[in-house]
Amino acid sequence: MALKKKPVTGMKDILPKEMEIRNYVMNMIRETYGKFGFSSIETPCVEHIENLSSKQGGENEKLIFKILKRGEKLKLESAKEEADLVDSGLRYDLTVPLSRYYSNNANELPAPFKALQMGNVWRADRPQRGRFRQFMQCDIDILGEPTYLAEIELVLATTTLLGKLDFHNFTIRINDRKILKAMAQYSGFPAESFDTVFIILDKMDKIGLEGVAAELEKEGFAKESIDTYLGMFREITSDIEGVRYCKEKLKEVLDPKVAEDLETIISSVDAVKSADFKISFDPTLVRGMSYYTGPIFEIAMDEFGGSVGGGGRYDEMIGKFTGQNTSACGFSIGFERIVMLLLERGYEVPGSNAKKAYLIEKNMPADKLLTILKQAEEERRNGVQVNLSIMKKNKKFQKEQMMGEGYTEFVEFFRDKL
Image (cartoon, rainbow, N blue to C red):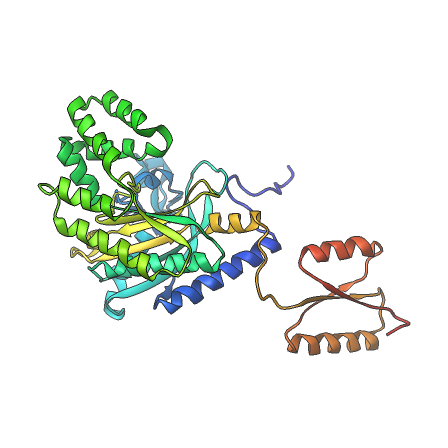
């Protein structure tokens, strides 16, 4: 049987042109986030199955690539349930591994700790445009900072990066899980049904207010609760006035400090931002992860037609490991989607070194080849990227291929003309 040359479904090979942009984006990430005080860390791609299945990862827990036990621990004949066969899995995000990492190493880390983590994650998802089963994630997190300074820094760092990558007119959508819950409580939905309400609300972009109303009715919720709930969405604006509306309207069920802090985050980011974007209060923003406890945010780009990043505060996750809650807040950019958008617009890496190709006639004598090698070495010392290739019969096609890789200058060497 012939071996398969295509990658596994949902995975992809990365060609040199894309790799050049990926490397540039990763370097820009390290440089930009480094200026905000974030330190690079790394965690293993394989995580304990108990950690991945701790009901913290929302829908992602249904998408785990699980790993069988090995050697003597794998007892197929006596296995009665999945837990008898599986002990680990590939990480589906970087937040759960970071929480374990911090719990294990907190005594050796500063407080607060600002972490930058880039690495592949895996989800057994349905592949589509901009979505793969193996993909790079890039997260920044601030651990041990309980105030809104963490949210402000995360939004400013992320938007500064996007600005440097030549993205404009995008939107940071922001909300707070406490406002989500207060709106549901004020409307009379039972607390045990909040998650169901939020799952339906999360479809607002696709099905609109009427669609949300229909689905809430279908779930059997009282019409009075539905009307009260959706009535607020009709009145709330997407600016600071919308946050103030929530503060006043929900004063019996919402701590006013929640709205005040959110207003401070929005106004501070607006006043200090260096990139071209707007920050918008969006009470319909839910974010799927159940571990969020406070402010949540998402990056919306019209050219993609969806989210290209998001995050929020998750003050209770680290406590699942240590027994003591630790303030935590993070922001993740959709690295693969960012790279895809740059490729689609024909993005050229700025400030790249000159790329020169030496085409050498076949059977060049050793002494003359040595002269060429020395010349190439001298140019490389001066910052020029030099690629040595043996001249092919179809020289025109050879040059066209190399031009596609960014080579702009060609030097030809012949045996009798060196």
